[in-house]
Image (cartoon, rainbow, N blue to C red; front, top):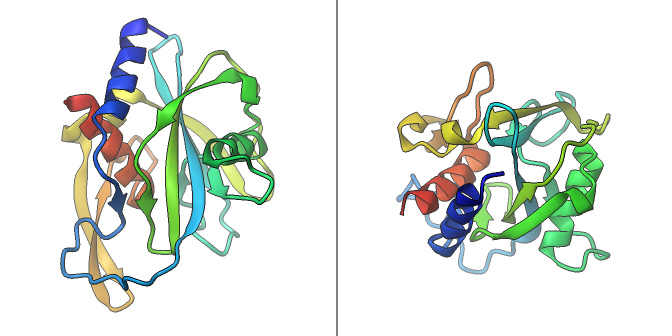
Length: 199
C-alpha cells in the first residue's frame, strides 16, 4: 500500500472526533445518563489491490436474530479472554473472514460508536499487508466483499435517509455501493473515517 495512503490513514486517526452514535442525526433523542453499554470492536481493514485500496466488509447471514442481511465490518462483542478491544477486533476478523492476525498492521482506533442495540463499538483501523484466503464463518457471514476506499471516504457519496424505528422517525447515514446498501452504524463509522481523512 502506498506510503502516502498510510500517512492519510494515520492522519485520519489523529484528526478523529470525539465519538459518534446511531443517534447523531436525531437531536431530539434523549439517552439515559445511567445506561450501561457493552464493549465491542470492529476491524476496518484496508487492503491494497490491483485496482487500489479497498475496505473489507461482510454481509450478515439472513437467519441471524440481530441485523440479519445487513452490511457490517468483521467484529463483535468483547470476550473475557481478549487482552483489549484491538484483540477483540482481530479475533472476530479471524473467526468471521479468516484473516490471519499477522496479516493486519493495526494503525490505531477511531473514537467509539454507540449503537441503538446498546453496544459501545471501537473501530480498529488496520492495513491488510497481504492477500489471504477469505473464508466466511458459516453461522454468521453470508458474503465477504470489498469496496473501494475512495468511494466510502468521499463525502459526496453519503446520504442521509430515514425510517420508522420504535414508532419514531430515525435518520441515519448511507453510503451505497453497487448492490450493497451500507447504512447505519457501519456507514456512520465510515463517515467518521471520511471526516478525519478530509482534514
